[in-house]
Image (cartoon, rainbow, N blue to C red; front, side, top):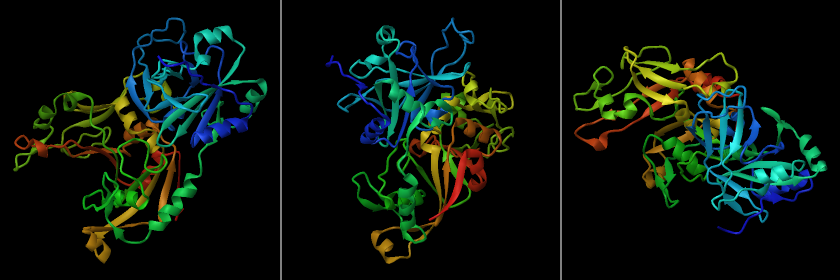
Length: 458
């Protein structure tokens, strides 16, 4: 085991807190004065709504064990406890070195509702001393600050501060987060809008070759269907990646050539589709066999309507659209299902599966109209590009979403399922799985998907 690290920083004022988080590269930071009982055993109560952190940080959601508490009056020992594990979480020691935590997470107790932070142990099997049970018992009157920031490309970073009364009072005067006046906003972003808009303006309203970066960072022609998205990333010097952090400093860039836009493509994790893909795809009541020997699963699926092509009806199970506080529903077994006429679940998407696909990456997004044509410019032709792309000089800037808005949009038929899986028994390499969740008119859908949106002229 390595030497014990110190994670308790000595900081005297708000300026010192800001200097520290900015020095770490944070573009967002929250701070909270902890209660006396907040420690690694009791967990750290953060606030009632999990979406505060879900909109900022990238999590992997899964279902935890049932509640075991017998002391709290609202505890339900049969209640599900969803948990969101930080994809990356680092403690910052007093030398400003980052030490990864193994299993930092937020636990969601829907029956109260409340969200708590837990899993503080580092890869060196250490925790901040001030978060230990021993410390809180021995020092009940010591005031502690928990600072939680986000560093683009790195993830969550956190550190503790042993604070005097003056600093605590300064913190309490900070602007409270919209979901909790106790959690204070220390830093709310560098000017992403001011940096991104000029970059988009430079490439707008002009035909440019359809290209992308390869793994080596070299420019190569790109002649497939995603040419608009890859060409924009290339124009903005964004290297292709498969992470969930968004394309530009956490902002998702969505190019579209039509009003119809695909939002995500999560595969089912429930039902026959998930258990036996072959059996699902060769079920003649659901799929159809083409003359070339391939089986197809298609059709527009909208909540409450039976799809004539697949004979399946989409429903959201255990979801109450009238409950305004979505956190209160997270102990229910909510899922989106495609059901056969006899009630059999043919395919289903658990709430955790959907939450894993619609999180921080989508919380801030820019939708950019684009068009493409066969290459006409000599530069594009000489490069071997089949297409040229032009981006509009007006975009839609959207902020504030979450699984509650996602489920409601599915419930109201704003988001529909438009699947296109193919099963080819004789040629397995041609088999593909693709379940597209899309909207028919992105402009009409934006008010349902985001808390705020505005048209921005470049």
